[in-house]
Amino acid sequence: MDRARLVGWRLACVVALVLACVAAGRAAASPQDVVVDWQTHGQIDGTYSISDLYNAKRLMLRLDASRAGEFAALVDEKIEADFLGIIPKLDPSTDPVPSVPPANLPLWMTAMAVGALLLAAGGVASAVYRRRHRTG
Image 1 (cartoon, rainbow, N blue to C red):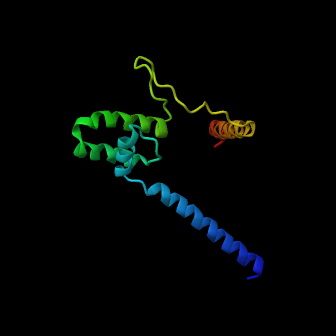
Image 2 (image 1 turned 30 degrees about the vertical axis):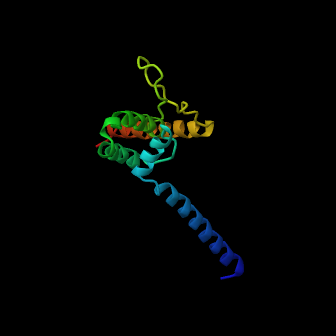
Image 3 (image 1 turned 90 degrees about the horizontal axis):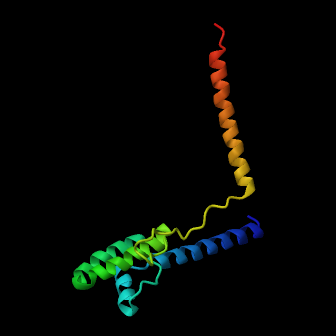
């Protein structure tokens, strides 16, 4: 291997190692961290996985059943906001509004989708035409 390829491989390995460390940092959270975050200042501000949030609700039932309902409501809001894209309700009579904007697809992607649809429709029409006009 020449020197440039060797440097490229080393650089790729370093980048992969950094990405693995960053991903491991997110996975290092636990249900206990969620409970501590809430007990510290009454909010859940950290970044947690959905399994950590669900397991934190079960943990809170064992730790303090009297406050578990309040905690479960905050966890549900966190799940709705972070994983479902729903803004927490200010008025219970209103429907939840998605916080994710509508899909604004680029023109090239829309053109590719229309082209694929036309090709598929042409293929179906061709098969129907050939079947109806068979000789024999």
